[in-house]
Length: 113
Image 1 (cartoon, one colour):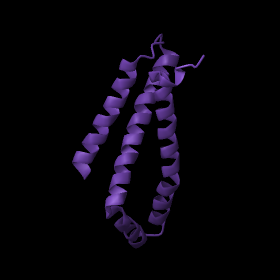
Image 2 (spheres, one colour):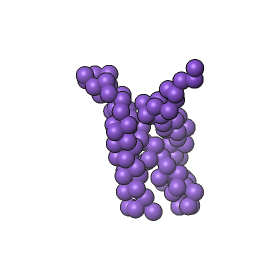
Image 3 (tube, one colour):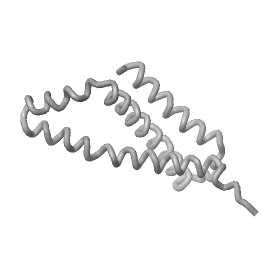
């Protein structure tokens, strides 16, 4: 008998939470490189920041903010499951987390792009 566990909202939320965590972990070395250029002086930092004006980097920034928002929202869901008497892993809770994250991503895109 084939299990449909992979189609449940809790499983999908766990996968999205892990993937957003991986995206954030991939971003960290690039962030440290940017911080390292600041130690080299204002001219070196400014030459690095010129790269951030391309459309690719702006889309990547939006993706980063969206990944951070979804990771935070789904992380709060996990904390609620573990610390509170909340054991419900319904589609409504997952949908609310994803909707809040999408709203943050949209607001960032409308404000910064």
